[in-house]
Amino acid sequence: MKKTLLALSLLGLTGSAVASPFYVDTGTNWDGGTTVTTDKACDTCTSSKNEITYAYQSVTTVTDTDANGIDAGDTVTTSGGLAVGAFGFNRVTGFNPGGGYLTNNDNGYGPTTPVTPGWQLSFSFTGLAGQIVQYTPNVSLELAYGPVGNFDLYYSTDNGLTTVNFMDIKVTGAASGSGGTLLAGVVDFTNVDALPVSMYNMFNSDGATCNGATGFYDIWLNCDGTGLPLMEIGFLADFNTNASQISITDNLDGTFTLTGNHDGSAVFNVPEPSTLALFGGTLLLLGAGARRRKA
Image 1 (tube, rainbow, N blue to C red):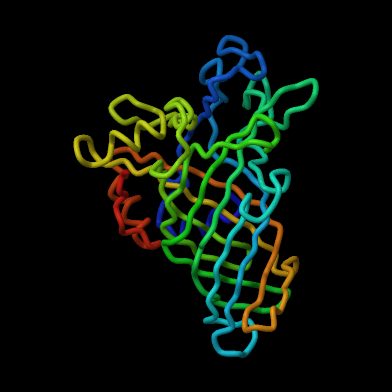
Image 2: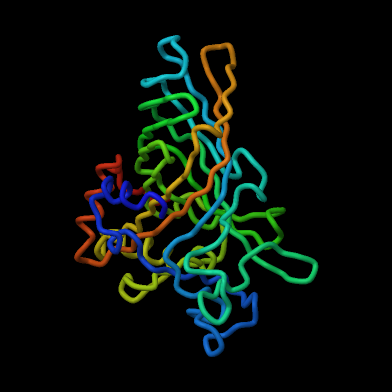
């Protein structure tokens, strides 16, 4: 991730403890490669990955609490991704390592064309609530968010014409600096679309397992702290923001609207038993406290 040192200082973890390897199993062999001819984890899988990369748009409403223009202490609410823009501008752009066929295979990830079918991922987030920590026009914008908001991930095979919500992230908190926002959360499936279990298990751990299960859904469902030890799959997203590229509109009602285009990357953490307490404690520092409630 581009702000690795800042991410690690916030979480108090080493890079190896934060980023766990994973692979994506779509259930379809999109590029014809196999485990014999490529480094795929399975014939319908990608190879092992460390992070996802993405581009997105955002809209933030600032409430001018002191009638002094945008400054520290003003409250903010932010939404982004498919909640505010079209699929083409709000999508996962790839994986790291990725872009190869024999090695770093992505199982045909990319747009569908008349000649080549493909699959893509996207996301949407709404209701991130917090406040401005520091603002210098055209120079820096620092925000802090609490453990509220929705973050949903989507799968599409037709360039976003239809999407299905296969996995969510329960936001535990976020902190921001001049380069952008670091958002932390845990994988959650409480309010996803009704889909086959195999789609919930598209993301798989390529390391730690829950009693042998690698699928994120299986880990969330079974290692919930009741029968098997709790394994909350952590999520850390780096949302890059250039303050000079933010568009600001004065709504003349005591609020401002900030819009921008961003890129970034995200990692997952599937903790080994020895790191469960450490990673869980660092999420608490970013606002985690509530245990998930299953419907």
